Amino acid sequence: MKEKIVLLLFINKNTPQIPKFLEDFRRIIDERYGDEYELDLQVLDILDNWEQAKAVDVKVTPTLFKSNPMPIAKVTGDLADIEKVIVLLGLKKPL
Image (cartoon, rainbow, N blue to C red; front, side, top):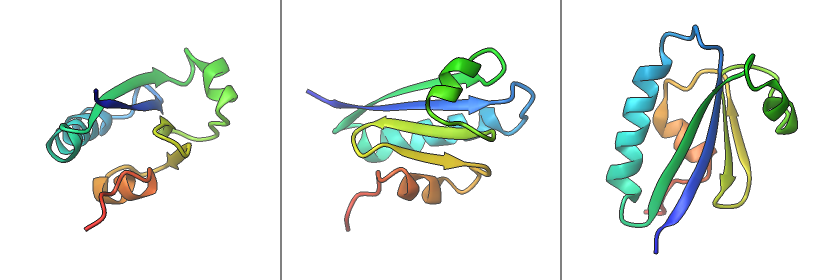
């Protein structure tokens, strides 16, 4: 059974680069980890979901919050460098 990568992406709904990030991120995760993990990624507008954002201490957008697999991780700000995001989330496979 595949383990889930559970992510919450808190955004301001007017952030234009988010669709491109989501497309690229999903593709890379599927290519690299598709045999091990199932991606559960929710995109939440911070204004509509402020209580949930507050619960995980979101201060800026975009913020990508990983609750599974452990340990919990958070990446804030520029998400353009997907390789860096993967490393900061602790998902980088060892070589």
